[in-house]
Image 1 (tube, one colour):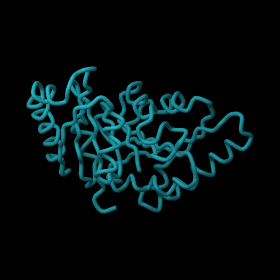
Image 2: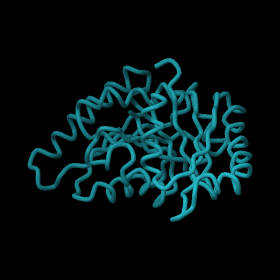
Image 3: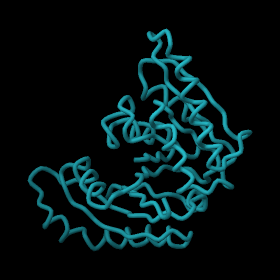
Image 4: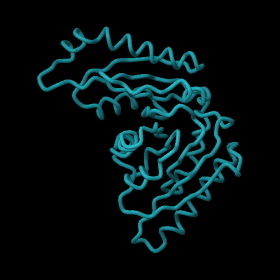
Length: 235
């Protein structure tokens, strides 16, 4: 993945914006900064754009320039609609997006937590290193949420984490920086939110069914809302 395309989805009128310190940890992705404004019932896109389009576009340009100053090529677009999930899905399919960033308040990009759910997705987690510079990473912690009612849940979790750690080590992350933890719980969103304390970035995968409704399920946004930590969803 030479230049992965990262969708940065922000919501107006009060967008969360990646900090300069956070962006310094990026490698060489291309960013597509999309601002979304949720229309009220009966409000038309044309009226909203006429009233606030210039203001929001100016803010989007400033956000894109923040990426550019850190060496990340950034385009921007403004969308008015009633359904943010449908809007994001349309953009992802239209533009062949490789990852989605939900911004948070982290000021650095040194401590990363990766949620590893299944063996088929283990190799995919290494694509993180196409987006984040490995020399910026102080630690890469892996977590698996096991079902407490599954007698093999914890052992299977350890196997998944071992393979994910191997993929990351092969991609250039020093093994001494990789840590592995299996947590048990029936509420995956809550367990991941608890595990997310103190991290600069949480990494999820698109096809991990227990992590929400595809890439736009509730868990990524729940973590951002609860911990104010950025979430990167790999496709």
